Image (cartoon, rainbow, N blue to C red; front, top):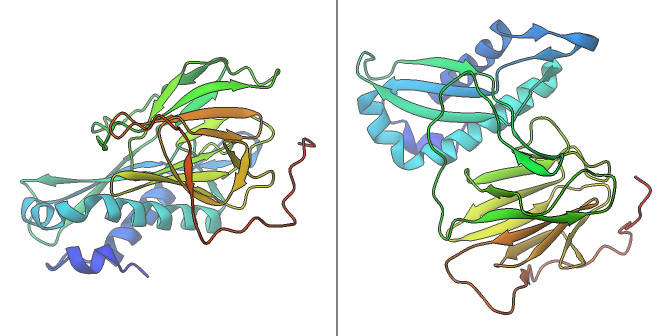
Length: 263
């Protein structure tokens, strides 16, 4: 169930399946029923491990976090749980744990939201480590939108994690309050020194410089449009004067693509 980076990182007695199960139990234990029958669970997790284990898995920490977050989202969907923000996982080495042991801390954090003319910052009840610093400080700048969305120009969101989820859902890293945006609309994936945008099968599609795309490598100055919201991708290092994008050569436009405004 949990392989990949886990298999490479955990050579001690610490078992990844146990970590995943503990996160699920933490969600069950802290589940809270709120208005309209929604059940909210924590979305910000810290896996405390022995310092010896932390040194061993540190090189895989980012990919481990992505895998655990995916498992947590899948479990929440199965159980009918809801998040108020993006699912986050990180590891910390502590001196009072022995090799192969761990414990879970959890809290609630809201995601960044593009609404009312700004990128609103999240508020958390759990202290968080600083975001990752990627090559060229890749970021999104709100360029504009159609009337009625309440979004103005100039707000900036800097990419902080290897995978950034864009969409209307409350569990997105950057939530767009836009009726033309799907719940989970697209992802930005940091791969080496590049940022790749992947459409997640959204209803109205994703436009890059006015063209529908499924997967592209972004370059500085690229316009990304989701619903009625346009974001400009910026990256300091390797700036190109002919701002554009690199289309995945395997992509072929779906003849059934639906570019409509009936949101």
